[in-house]
Length: 79
View 1 (cartoon, rainbow, N blue to C red):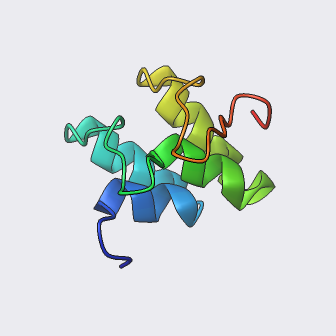
View 2: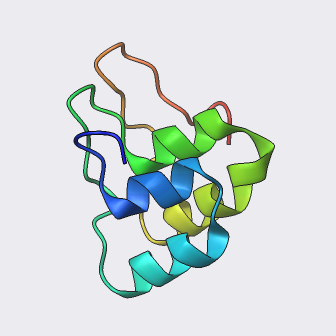
View 3: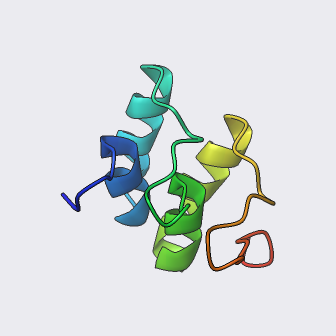
């Protein structure tokens, strides 16, 4: 796992819908950001079509589609 990433970040970036759903059900923090300001939603969106179900789960859990990372890139345009 990449330093500073949570299990939810790894699951979302890898497109693992089942793991993302299980972690969210267990109370994982969908708003946690790494040192670059990237949230699980940023990572799922950056991963492309294979991670779209994870992005949808994160949005349904309340993830902010307009949160920006330190490079001021928001992933709302990808979703």
